[in-house]
Length: 66
Length: 374
Image (cartoon, rainbow over all chains, first blue to last red; front, side):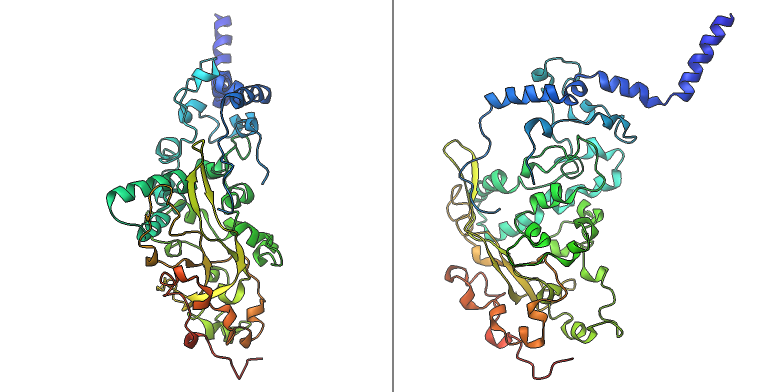
């Protein structure tokens, strides 16, 4: 019985005193979006891959000031 | 402004989770896509790059409801004055107008802003990219947002980058754009304006310089004598950038481009075509704008057949203000100085009719003064 009381108190303590967004942040950090977009290494690899397949977006004919 | 490398544009700073206001919102809640898909290609299906344009309601509206209410009327978002002004020069028939609209969509409407393109990333018109790892910026940084777009005229004027022209005195006092152009002005007020000078909460010099007409003020006589006769810039601006002959089109690969004639520095005082209670001055500074009869010829010939409806020398507020300028050094530096005024000889023949209301006839150029205040 004492054992359950201690566990119950620990859970109640964590719910009251640990900021809510810690749980949210963990969920956030687990997403693929977050993992990839916070990794410069991954982004460099992917953007190089994209650059190989995507043609230039800017015309060389643009001249003068807009 | 240094361009960002492709990966820098989309690199998210993990500190975003510490943002107490935005850190609890998961990426896909605003941008869509599939956050659980390990394949980046399919994970991006349905992703919206800027969820705040053209409608910011879903992304920002829940919390920033007051701003969101009027957001679409911000002229940085709606570009309404540009469209209205352009329409006044255009033919009204439907087929011509729809081709003109296609041209404007491909070239002109790309220069707009949004919540995201001021507070999170550089505007799309300058190739985007996060300002600081997707961290939200309460005040958009001047050089990566404001002058990133207003980089041909305002930036060189304000920072003193035009050869032989001094920077704006307000820049020397470390003032950034937002000191005069407030968030309220940027966010719109629910009204559609025909031009930017009508914007009710737009900046006025007298917002700060409240004392200039008071008896004890320095130069009170000069300021009182010229009140409602000349805009502040007529006396306090320096030569500024003018452009002409913008033509838009698509190259052989189908990529959009524009071409303008070389720009030039000039200073011209003309008659105010927008005279109103808010802008009562008789004389204002005029800037030649890039529009041309054939600007949209690639899309439709003679789309701007009513070209003469509006002047090509347009009221301007050069951002290179100085207390002392050559034209205000004494009365006769301006009075009787014909070269400062836009006259018929300064305007190309093909644009004379368009500018008839802003050119200053010889009899309206202020005469030389015999008496000058000390």
